[in-house]
Length: 144
Image 1: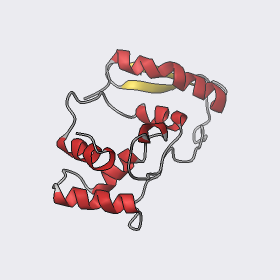
Image 2 (image 1 turned 135 degrees about the horizontal axis):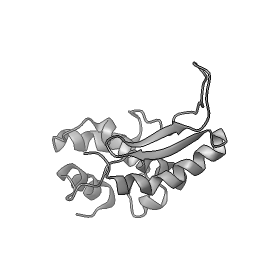
Image 3 (image 1 turned 90 degrees about the vertical axis):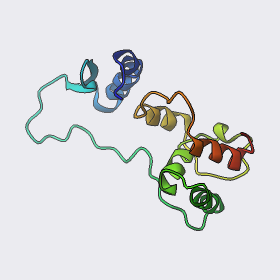
């Protein structure tokens, strides 16, 4: 499901501030009713001009020797999770240090700013947590 216009507008201010800092306001974020958030050029650019380049926001790879990844991989197999372990590892690796409070394993973490940016790619929350998510919380936080 696509973002609603209201949900998209919640992030426009942040993105425009980011564009102001990174590309001196030459790009502006707006909301299109059918497409959601879009970037609009605020000046003319020559064909082929690189507008900006950045490193990836978040890189995640399998960690076959990491004890937490090994536990997650086993859990995925035992509980027949819907997705490959890497998908859950990516989600767990997008949490901040504060999010890991009470966790009985060590995971890679992101900064609050990285997490805020990552959540801009995320669609509205599901109404009910998946069984897979509940198993992960139980395994690593000891809660149901």
